[in-house]
Length: 265
Image (cartoon, rainbow, N blue to C red; front, side, top):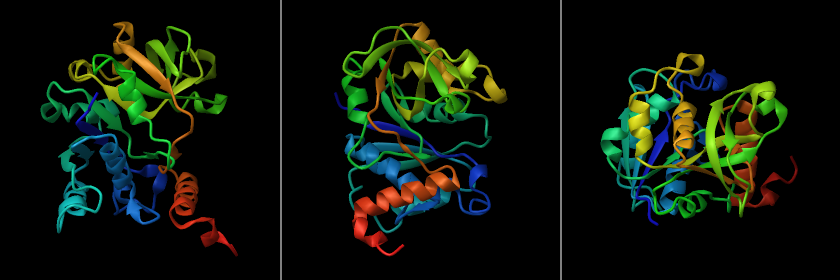
């Protein structure tokens, strides 16, 4: 099955990356030789997307547009059209995804969080597409979490055993913590959604932290019996913190330039 559109929320304020993000938008923080947002667009293009809808704040919109379009398409991205959409108020991740509804229409779509970069050779979007029954079921990427992470991520409610890294899900809970977690399987920023989620988000009240939570919409998909999870082989690289950015730079730098570039450090 071919998915031709991707939604990439990138409107976060980057408070964990201050002071670097006082002026530079978080999505444009450089990782090795390109901004974080470009890795997400490249990943979507590798999975066959022809259109990338990037959700940005007021400050980042024109900068993101210039990066991808000024002087022509970037090498390797000639086949994908990048379209920035401004989220005027920071009302939550679910609200950001919902801002793309008028562009997505009735198409299934990939959703990629730009804070997270896949490790080279470990793309997960094709596996999400393979588990979606031709775009009729939403599929979310999962990783097994340690106790400390259960209060930082959305956690899913399993509804079946795992078969070939896929399982049915009955819902999800946002940042439940150890005592309330229904499993140790956490949402890690890669999704394939049916357009049904956009209708859910349009009517969704604020949840955890007073924000429109994407996890709450995912929970409704699970309750309706139209949600699966794919357990990934490798963690994604988190570039939303200084320590994560350093780790990602080393990992991606070694892959691009070879381990010898670090000799002598």
